Length: 169
Length: 169
DNA sequence: TTATACTTTCAAAAATTATTGAAAGTTAAT
DNA sequence: ATTAACTTTCAATAATTTTTGAAAGTATAA
Image (cartoon, rainbow over all chains, first blue to last red; front, side):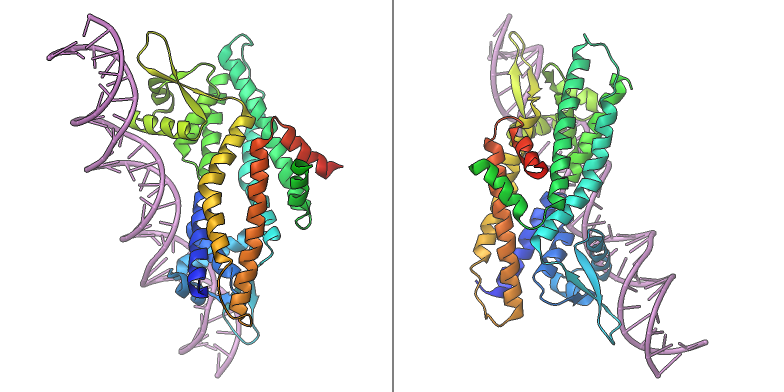
């Protein structure tokens, strides 16, 4: 396969995966493009390569910066901004985990722990089932939260290799 | 907090979390409702409690069955169908992991390995960056895939407790 | 200060996704 | 074979999310 075709396929696949996991398709595609760009690129470059509007490019890149995946670069003597993506996939995974934990997991965890203090009659099956389910979900969610925290602190691929060792040994 | 209020909050929170992670909000809400229902319930029950249409209820419940999270039950002498959700959160997590792996991770993994065979000039930075990024992503994706496979086989909460031990010790 | 080169905003439009509801389909009892 | 009880389908509609693009904003240079 030729590079040009491969690039398009990667951008498409990354966009699809993103959209299936609740990340805006265009944002994932812009990230994909930046991931395979050796040098920092401009808004114009992104607009051209992905055929998207200036406004969309601007907001999407800003989002990616907000996710900690992309940074602005300035070139001496130039006025326009250049964008560059961190290419270290472990950093990327950690960063995504960190943000999703903060934005989506923690708010739910907060609600779940509020729901553990619900009052009711111990003989009511509705109440007992509610308590049991919420309690179980809460415990699992806390474990997932802790695991993500560990992942965020772990350097290198040591994390995954450790996990895999647990199941091989 | 009273049970009735807590139920609504849980259904809302579960729906929101689902939608943030690419799962239809209504599907997550129906699942939430079933998770806190001690007995199997009918289409009518779901329609009433969530104020959704019969068609929507039918398709959503069918989806949940397709995800392996809900089963049909028949009651002797009755014609209507009852639905019941597995309440074991570890089973649920495994089942969701299994399905998402199959539906969303594996297709991307397939494309990624195709993309590793891209041809190009070793001196071309575009080519080198592409190769490096795809290679790195591929390696990480394979590790995630293996970890999910291990998770799917692991019984009980042994999985998470093992992971956590690795990082505490 | 004015012009130029850019970035940002956001209301409107387009695209996508989810939902409805009534008609068609199915199944089982009489 | 007909009715009754229920489930399924799907075209139309509604809701939501994404994208556009032109106007407004900002910063630099002359």
